[in-house]
Length: 620
Image (cartoon, rainbow, N blue to C red; front, side, top):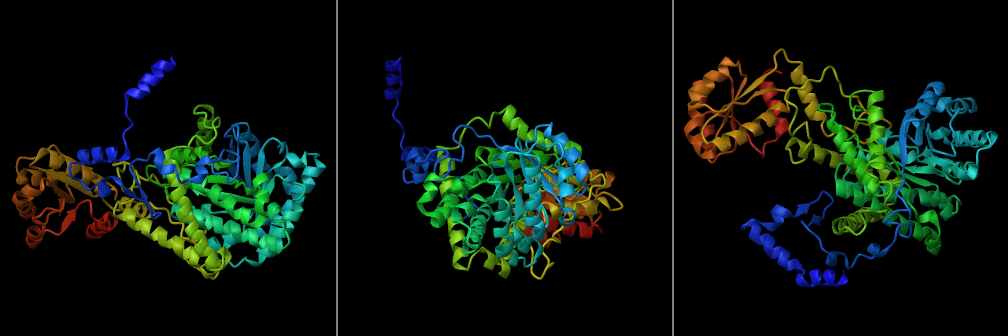
């Protein structure tokens, strides 16, 4: 058998990188390699169409093993188990307890309770946790920042009174005053040095509880680029390490108490790389505080709860949100995070229903029970592309981290508004990219459902008031990427008549079909009723058919060459009885404009602005 293998290997000569490139150049038939195949990321680096072993020769982290410093390959050595977490709003302790017990029987093994500050008490916690065995699951608590220490003391007392094994309990208390600066505009910085050490002291008998949180998911939900969430999360965590060590807390103990709640977006491979890069860099940061102790201690491990993004969710075609969150969950699971929260698909327009929450749970259970994602440690390790992305993202995230540190640290930058302004600027860029379809939103600005209506759904307004000053300074703008298109489409629905866009297809078969399909997708994003056609022999026949269909918009779809023949006669025959649009940007555009034709739609059009203008012309 070994002889056969040797013969198979010796019969083939491994092609070199240059030979691959030469073959690609031939297949491109003169097209520019850099423009066609090299991807320029928002993170500022290029991604090649393929990588080989030689591309990894200078990457030191590739030689590390799972469970070993610098933990790029994960904290675990023998499995990839993660907690399936569901968050519950606990305004009523008894109702929240009943829901918790129910979901624990349906596959959840991590609970996140949000408790109003004025409800924190021994009685409330006892009712909330009745029948729940904390030694078998992870418990996470969030409350008003000023009540976190009180809540921690109540929890410790409750666990002691019930004789639970304190050393075995796992969970967290979400203390993060810096998040309030970013999301509420309130200066809560005094709480950092005041309450953080007290909180760690209160939980000293619960070594498995993390209480200092970095909630960079807030940046993700505000449209931050991946390198921004990475770099800012690291600076955020380093800020808390500084605060705690200056307050006298041992650096190793401080690091063990920090938890990262990070977002995960739909950029599949980049998100896998983000979490791997985050662990790599965080281990290096902790090493600067604790020295070589980090090599033989777990304090250098980054513990991450990944939350699927709200930023890319949509109100229309909302079941597509399931596709988004599923790939996001896969990224997080493959990247070896510690727990995952899947955002229910209906969150953009309602309090998530029981059905939506069940689906969200099952999305994780599917990956565990059927895809076996929990069985293998760091399946991405050794992938040439992912290892490259991990290294490239680590470099860009580190640059941003150093820039924040040189500017005075994360807290200083947050108080100045620089973090908020930078993330909001990214949000603006992404909205502009969506408006021109350079960033696709499936079901919204690309391939919308032509016949869907909102059925009374209205977008849920985010509680942070989206970008304006609430507590004295600008806050993160959490306006979802699809929000402007949704506003446009909802306004169309309120019109007295649904506008009809009629495709006047004529001439070259391939071009008229392609442009009709493009135009239907383009215009349906505003909620217009689109009518495609097989083709007309004359423009007069097409215009007559459009008027018979009571069209408000007539879109002529043909080839560039034939527009010189068809566009102006069709425009004159229509004679202002409906809005006239040319699909494309033909060479004769100046001649068409000179004849009075104003409206053109093509791949370089600003879709959002164009549709807003059309609505205005239609009186909507």
